[in-house]
Length: 113
Length: 116
Image 1 (cartoon, rainbow over the protein chains, first blue to last red):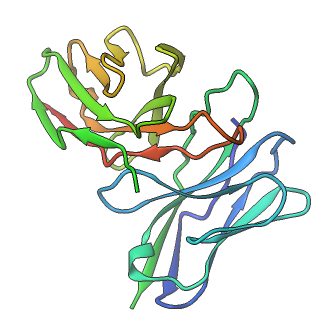
Image 2: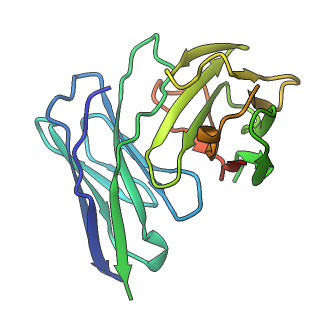
């Protein structure tokens, strides 16, 4: 799977927006951009995914650059519960793939009250 | 909201013993996965399972590991002869096979396996 690059850590204040960047300069045309997060002592949790267009759901927004070589996960109002490790993952989309995820180290987000 | 459940939450086993980790995926899901996370390290893919057979496996998933879906609801990971380095959190995940090709995976909260 193509590689992603994320900052090791970021800090945010509670109730402020958070922009988590991800670089994926070697992305191919069929790779989906997925974001998962892992709260302390829990399993990974799906956040959002997209291919080319920006996406919104109840948890977050995903902004994808026009050339698709980078993306940004946006949490509109950070809460203490959003403190977690956030993973940006490229998932190869072809018929033979069963969709296993290749996790990197992610970005550890700290939220200050 | 339906969820993936894993039991036990913590398993302590003597080195060399067999261990079975159990998972109940979301009921209408068709694809199943096991991952592991050694303390302080990345989440690593072990194996994917579809249509009652292994689809893909990583280098970690050697002959000591096996998976099974014995009764249409449970999905198990067996380690035949455990080693100290098998100590880790083991996560089960599932995803639906219906709808758009790209679907998210849903993870359980894991089983912490401690080998003594």
